[in-house]
Length: 125
Image 1 (cartoon, one colour):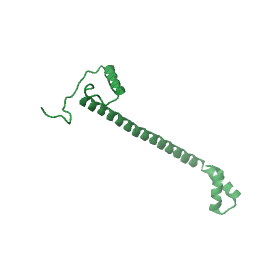
Image 2 (tube, one colour):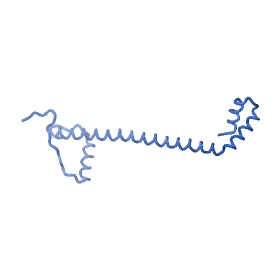
Image 3 (spheres, helix red, strand yellow):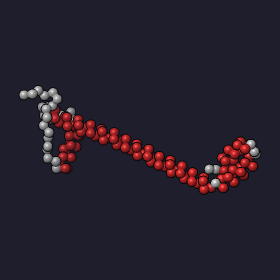
Image 4 (tube, helix red, strand yellow):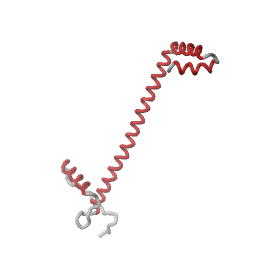
C-alpha cells in the first residue's frame, strides 16, 4: 500500500488538510506494518492459487475435449473397418489414418482380435 494513496483516502475521511492526513496515514501504516504484510501475503497467495486452479481446470477441460475427439475418430475407424473391406467397398477413412493404425499395430505387435457382430443393416441368413 502506498502512503500517497493513504493520504488521499485519509484526508476526506477526517476533513483535515492533506499534509496533516499524510503524516497520520504514514504513522498508521508504520504502526500496522505486520498486519499490512500479512494481508498482502495472504492476498497474493490466494490470487496465485486461484490462477493456478484456473489454469489446471482449463487444461483438464481441453484434455477431455481432445480425448473425446480421439475416441470419436477411433470409433469411426472401427465402424469403417467393419462395414467396408477396402477393395469392393473402399474405406471412407483417409490413407494417413489407415497407415497410422497399421504402423501402431506393428509397433505393439498386436495380434488381430476381432469381435464378430452383425452390422446394423445386415440381413439374417
